[in-house]
Length: 192
Image (tube, rainbow, N blue to C red; front, side, top):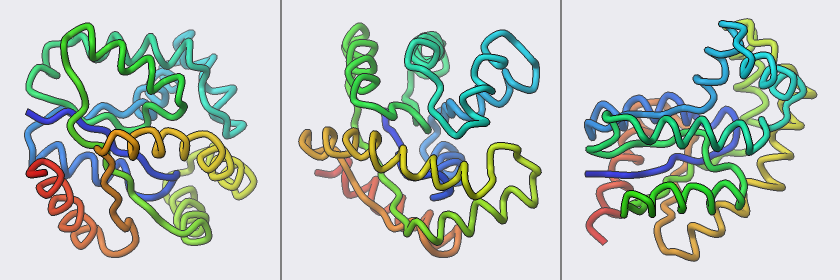
């Protein structure tokens, strides 16, 4: 059983690698970004609220995000483990996740951080925006999201590093190459 997080700046390949890790480990991948985008597309009240923040490149408020994650982690398909992608992004969300897991007498096994150079990420995300037509991927918004990542999420990374469960992997390279590095890192972390 594996309970893990994947963390990294926007465009570092978290979604792609999360799907691959999920398949290989047989755990469910839970992406807050996918859930937000589905709500935006469906024009749900949560989606309308989330879209305002997403279009500006800001994080959706903890009050909305935390409830969504708590509900999702209470579903049956997470009994054999899970991979969270996009949560927690702030130290307050780390504390909230700790509370959720403690309720079920659980804890995280590994936190995987994908690393990449900011300029490479901007280039990647602008390319993705052209391919997919995502309204939240223009250069100003991308750079704002990267700034937010550095300001807020790096504190999350530091918190998990202090706990000794952080594993860093270079997210630059071919998809298969990165997946191989990721799986080796997870195996090493689980053996430790």
